[in-house]
Image (cartoon, rainbow, N blue to C red; front, side, top):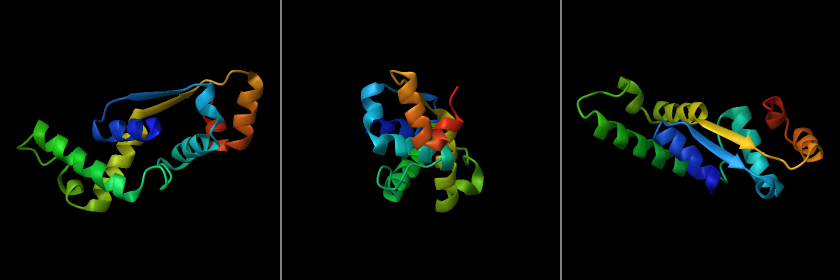
Length: 124
C-alpha cells in the first residue's frame, strides 16, 4: 500500500517522493518484484496499480492542474488524449519517485541483487 500511495503522490502531485523500505518490508518478494518492475519499466504491475487506478490518478492529476492554473491548457493536447495523459502520469511518477532499500546485511543485499536484476542495476 505504501508503494501504491508513493507512486500516486509522485505522479499526481508531481513532487519528489522517497519511499524507504526497511528490512521487514524487504522480506516480501511481491514488493521487491514490484520495485524491480517499476525500475525496469517505469510502471507498477497491474495487480498492485491497475489500469483503473492509473485512470483515476490521471483524473486527479488533471483536476489538480486545472485548480492550480484554471486558464492554462496544461500541456495542450496531452490532457485530452487518455493514452498520452496516462503516459504523462507514469513519466511524472517515474521522475519523482525514489525508492531506498535498507537491507540489514551484505548477504541480504546480495540476495536482492541476484533475484531482482533491475534493483541491482540501480544500487549504489
